Image (cartoon, rainbow, N blue to C red; front, side, top):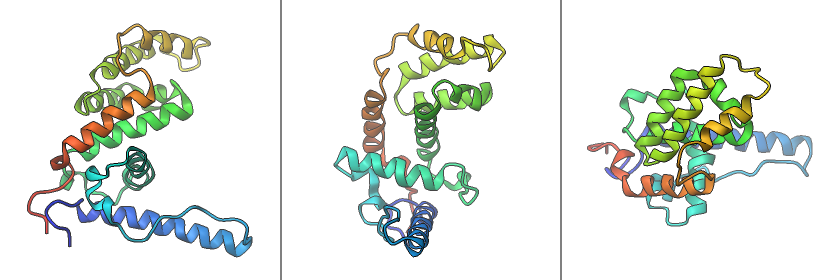
Length: 195
């Protein structure tokens, strides 16, 4: 059972299930070739139970991206109505950051106008107002194009992004704000009364 200041049980269970999956992938890969395998994490949670207290930035980022995001985002096993309110905006921001890192502005067309409105609200909630405003301009440019295959798609969306003053245009700058949000708002990640 969780103490009052720990992540909800369903979060811990989802993370551990994801870790078990990678342990199995590792075992399967090594069975085929002993020189192959996957990096795995322990099948128990320690500091992660109060992840907002992890002092090392790199360790916290690794947990957020490598455990929390991969275990929870898009999971059908999570009852979002029973989750503390910090998880959804945090995960929306982390997923959009990851999506953009791999696909650039195609992430906007993959999400679409409706999902972008929710993502923009999530950026504001975690304290990235400038980034949210820039994404409003990007979304407007995307909607204005009306064609995902426009030859200048990336250039036009990039120009819209740069047209808005933004104190956090780099991923590293946004990571600082995200970590601050997590560390300064632990009550958004645990449920009062859970034991």
